Length: 376
Image (cartoon, rainbow, N blue to C red; front, side):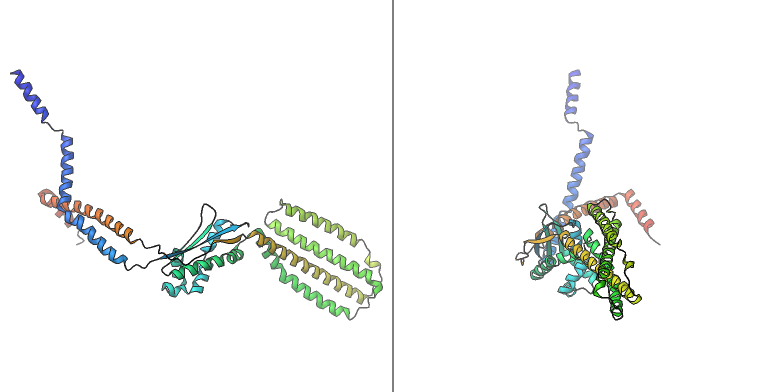
């Protein structure tokens, strides 16, 4: 009797099923059943969508990309600044105006044209330090011409908008030029009037020479102080150029002191001649000041050209022959995949609603939810 009970227990243990395993199998089976019930929609809808998208992509125009590869040598302009210049509003507006891109893009204003152009232009430096400017357009000729315009305009725009130390210096000195030029004209006119009433002779040439030298040193000192004032505004007091200019200023003061030691008052000069000499001294001061300022501006311009990088073409722009887009197959595949997953989710939701409707308790709860969700 005991042996029979043991045999029966063994048989039951053989055919026993783990409840968790049974639940997993039932869940997988439910999923498979749900997918099978909606198999036509799951497999049919993605193919229909893919077919429609494939037809739509046929109406999307081909795009072509033209690229210019440039290299920048020398200069002190950061790479990020160069990229920002290419993407700037002034650069974009110049391109839009040159090629009438509002009509080409079929837009009414520059704002929309700039937005489309910005999306079509790709700019950046590669790992080798080359600057690549790529322009995409449905018209290969347009893409070529726009990329070429960016290549040609870049150097002038960098020169126009870069603010290196030398460019700031040039601007600072150029702002002084109108006032200095005006002073020179006034001094010249006063000297012409004073010349008519002067009786200065060749014996008085020493006085004239001393006055001219005194005025020249005064003007050079004034310009050197102006140069130092600019460097102080940029906190360049520890810069070697500042220290050198300070030494030059000290040397000018010493030379001016040597000239000033000559007692000009010891010469017998009439009142009218004194007016002439005063006008002559003012003219020499204004003229030397003007000449020194021009030299400072020219030196700043030269330094500015050295600070701006030299842009050389590594690979000239060519008219693109092969299209770069759109990738119609990829578009169709993505749409098909997305639709496939959406349809699967819809199948699970639809099956869940069917089960809810078949369950009286859940069905009544669903009706209560519908009533509660109504606005009235």
